[in-house]
Image (cartoon, rainbow, N blue to C red; front, side):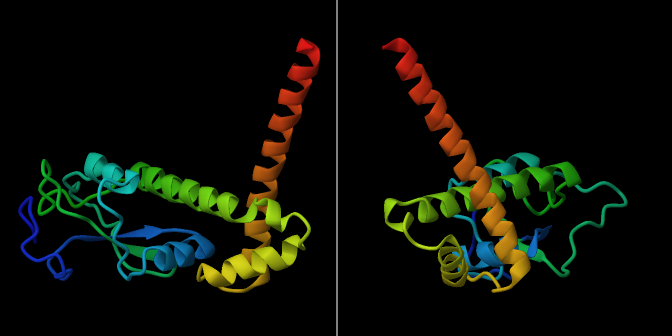
Length: 173
């Protein structure tokens, strides 16, 4: 276990691993995105900031850190101002904050990849299937429907924002 500085970056056996419950599509995307089991977030990422802020000493009867289905193993980095030998607990609220951050990253990547001018004439269904395949997400109807719904919500908000901007421009003229 590191004491504020890792002794060997490749030695994951000595480092703290937390298990975060995520929806199946999100867990698959995250593990593919960060090419690892366990997942290791980039230095100075928002996810690592969340871990540094919210990791704390475990309460007496804490037992929320165990592997399981749809639980993604996350490698906790060594922090300069927090010793992860003793601060090994992430509360339920903190886990929700971390999961929300991951969901936002997913949404941003989905939007950036799918809402391009080149995709306008193509069938949305085929584009989403291809996106799922390239991002390591299991090809099933449940995952497709979830991702399609996320994309459609983002697209609708974007279109509504554009409409409002155009209306403002027309009123100003």
